[in-house]
Length: 130
Image (cartoon, rainbow, N blue to C red; front, side, top):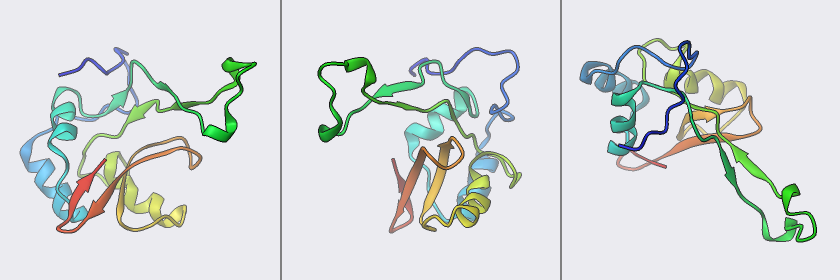
C-alpha cells in the first residue's frame, strides 16, 4: 500500500485500529459498502493526517500564466477513519450533512469546515464511490 500517512506521535484524526465488526456496523448505519481501497488504507492506519496534502488544480478560466504560483492547490489534510462513535470519523457525516445542509447521499471523508469537502457519493445499490 502507498505510504500516505504523516507520522505524528499524536494524530487527532487517528482512531482505534479497524476491525471487521466496526466496518460492518458503520456500513449498516450509513447504508453503504465502502470501497475496498479505502478499507485497505484504513487497515494500515484508521484515519489520520496525510503526508502529502496539497494537490494542484486550476479551473481553465483561472490559469495565471504570468504568476503560476498563484494557481490554486486543493488541500486535504486528513482522512476520517471508521468508528462506531458518532462524534468521530465517517459517522460524523450524519451531523455535518444536517449542519451544512448537504445532500444526504454522501459520506464525508475529509473537510476543512465546509469550504473543501472530500466525500464518497452513494449510488444504488448502496455502493460508495470516490
